[in-house]
Length: 383
Ligand SMILES: Cc1cc2nc3c(=O)[nH]c(=O)nc-3n(C[C@H](O)[C@H](O)[C@H](O)COP(=O)(O)OP(=O)(O)OC[C@H]3O[C@@H](n4cnc5c(N)ncnc54)[C@H](O)[C@@H]3O)c2cc1C
Image (cartoon, rainbow, N blue to C red; front, side, top):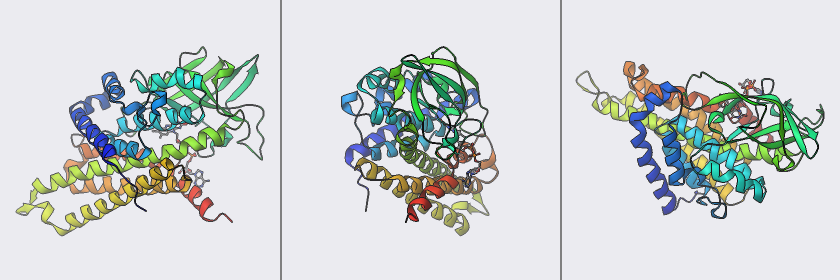
């Protein structure tokens, strides 16, 4: 089966490619500053990229998941930090609102995630629960009609830019046998009393992407803050959202790998050693050829998962396969790119050094490679 990519989808991706390339001169300073420029986020909103997959009826472009994957690849081929910000905003944040939000919740929050004034965030991970996300300890207790939330969330992407955070918290006591029971998603406004955003994490890569901890101390929200089914948010919001989000991270990894290899290929053509371009040496050519084949394979897996999702078909295993293969592939491709560029590839002034650091996070967030293998094996070996 070949995932179909239509003319509109290609045109959108090409427009984003041009936009992303125009940002290149600004990347180093934004990475050093540790934030995405506000005007870049606003411009992505104006271009419609931030509401790409939101249905037209809700004010978005109504584009397909295939188109979104192509756009994320283009962003990541230039700037990984920007790609993950857009992926989390459009994938798990807006995606959860579109799938599970009431008409009122969509009206209140979607415009603010699409117009470029901010970016959505999703808070599942806690100090004591990462891969074993169902063991989360944040609580939501009844308070009249509404709820009082307490807890601490870790590593929340886009937190500093978010007008609203999707927070997963437990309603009622933890059942050791069924830890996912009772987990509920809440829409928590970032300016609600009792919400504290801790200092941004200092990371190996993705320096301009915000990753911060969220502290909830007696945060009061109304009954209308519940997103999706009460007590069933783990499957209905978190896991369903991550299925889609993983396609975005796979696309990000494809873009990072492609971007690194494009730069390494250009360098190999102009760098001369032993009296000829290093691109003439078979070992260099073969390394780039192998990496290029893997990029294409990863893209096909990614587009297949996106296409299945667009078609309303099951795609959990395919999304995990895409994320596993694409993100592990990006490690190899980034290494090949650095190696091809020799000492220059190791230096801060070369973009491939940044690509190699940024690629590293992709095998960790939205489920580690080990967790993707668990998901794939669970489906493969289901009796
Ligand atoms: C840059 C960045 C951004 C992030 N953004 C967000 C965000 O926006 N929202 C959010 O909620 N979280 C976010 N995260 C958190 C991320 O999803 C977690 O880091 C990830 O799920 C792994 O959890 P952990 O770090 O607690 O590692 P752990 O779960 O402690 O895992 C440690 C190691 O043990 C392995 N392991 C764990 N369980 C098993 C098992 N059963 N079998 C085999 N191996 C296993 C893991 O694969 C890993 O190698 C982000 C993380 C990073 C690095």
